Length: 116
Image (tube, rainbow, N blue to C red; front, side):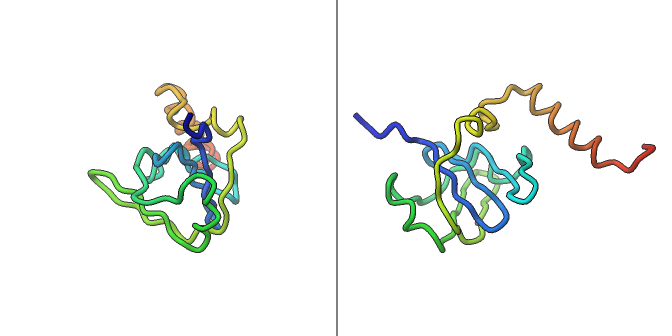
């Protein structure tokens, strides 16, 4: 039987990259805790990753994500961990389209100056 631990979190100084296998399914700002639903790395695949259980060997390295239209290279990884269950259900891949649109709309409204 294969390893069922498919989810990992790669931490950089400012960002968390949440992966299911080699696909980026969530990106979160470490300072604010806000999920970045429009981050370029979302839904892209990592070109190379350590085997499950050997993730600590990735500290100091960068993750390169590849897609047909864009590539993303992270800043150096400072830690690797496992997501909490409540984080897994917040991933973009788990959300419905209407949920994502509402999150983006709410975030835009809260960032507008008062009176707009």
